[in-house]
Length: 133
Image (cartoon, rainbow, N blue to C red):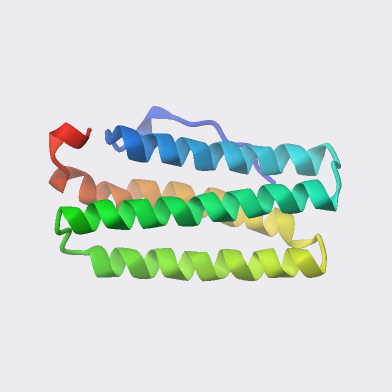
């Protein structure tokens, strides 16, 4: 399980998106802390639910923004979000059955978030008007 530190290279320059990404990092770190403090399955489930729900809310916001600006690759971006959401829901279901999936969920969130920000989200930044930055 990993704890994260936000670094400037993760900034898109779009404040609302960066703040949402930072909040996802906060949830990932909360998951890490609950796991390492052995706070129990109920506390872990609460954090996982918050993390998953907020991530899905972020996806909806981001997709709406990209739709507003007629992002040409929106459909492909949505597919990436849908695939990731399916993986996360599957891990949450596995956690509900046994708490073993929490480490896997944390690792998936960490890897996916950084890769997605640096490679996929970076693609749309140039087409968002500077007034949104």
